[in-house]
Image 1 (tube, rainbow, N blue to C red):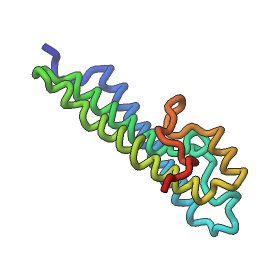
Image 2 (image 1 turned 45 degrees about the vertical axis):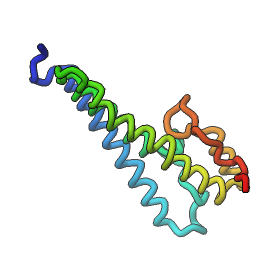
Image 3 (image 1 turned 135 degrees about the vertical axis):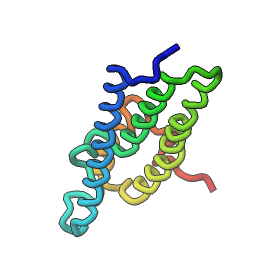
Image 4 (image 1 turned 90 degrees about the vertical axis):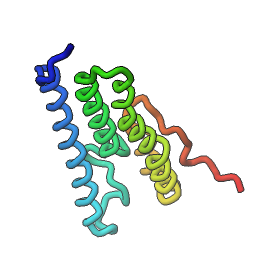
Amino acid sequence: MRSPDLDAYDAVLIGLWLSMLVVQSLADNAKYAYKQIPVDERPTPWIQSGLWALSRHPNYAAEIIMWWILATVAARGIEAPGMFWTAQLAPTFTTLLLYCLTGPMLERKQAEEYGTDARYLAYYRRTPYILPLVPCPVDPFATKKQ
């Protein structure tokens, strides 16, 4: 039986969660600030600096990681049979939602808006979708069949 008290491992996880909250906030704030710049004064119509140079959706990356950390902390204190898997539902849902629905919708929108711009294509090729090594499940540049 595990003690309900938090230990050093939990403290590390909570510290990681807080750091992801900062990353998510910084990404959201950077995008907001970028959108406040008049379009004709921006280097590109889309943000591609700071955290946005590391991921096309760094706010999603932080959100996904935060949910998995939270589930890990919760699961460490679960003793009831079957409840461990219940704790995995929220991060699984969030990951699937962002990777397979919301993210691809944004990718398609950006491909439609900027897909003919060589600078966007270069950004698209060099910058991971959400997390490195985990590609977008759809090709946003694929033509729609009618």
